[in-house]
Image 1 (cartoon, rainbow, N blue to C red):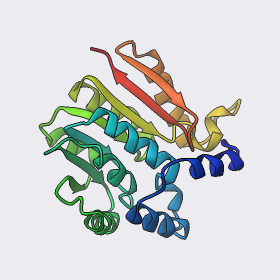
Image 2 (spheres, helix red, strand yellow):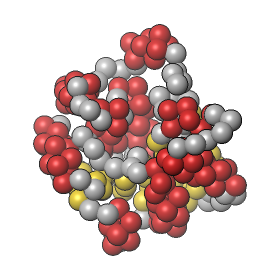
Image 3 (cartoon, rainbow, N blue to C red):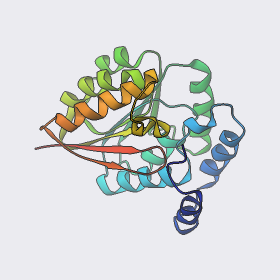
Image 4 (tube, rainbow, N blue to C red):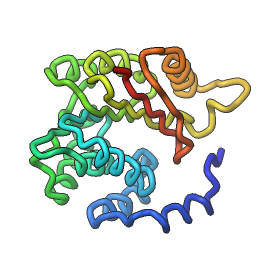
Length: 212
């Protein structure tokens, strides 16, 4: 299902700030990658970058690195001395992402972890200002429950793919991942400890702010 009108998407990208050279290089690689749709891309990336600049976080957690595009976008808004921890299950993606991070000269701000996100998050003794969830869809509920207590009051969780290619809009939700995303959306909807808004950008972004 085409969620966003392609003409509107193209126009929005024309009006928005351009990608930097590293972001553009990643976008070109993603366009020919068999799983290239997993990369955040121009418009979503600039939104993440802007949110990070507005928040000026000291600690960012990213669950799901892939090629490093979103990590690069988010790291640009870090305050002086800030760090972004990004977790990726696949070793080959970590290697690719590290190359892109080095190319962007952000290796002093971004720390890559390879392995199971639930195990790694539990070991990180951090209080998060901003969390970006973009990993296996069946894990979203577990990730949310694990990071919310470690999120500072007023901190923000951003969950990607919450429209899941439009499958959550169907009268009967069939796929395993779509069912997991729908359950996650419903869980967040009922959570009175947070404020939330679902943005119909790309495949859907759910912004979740922890109440003070």
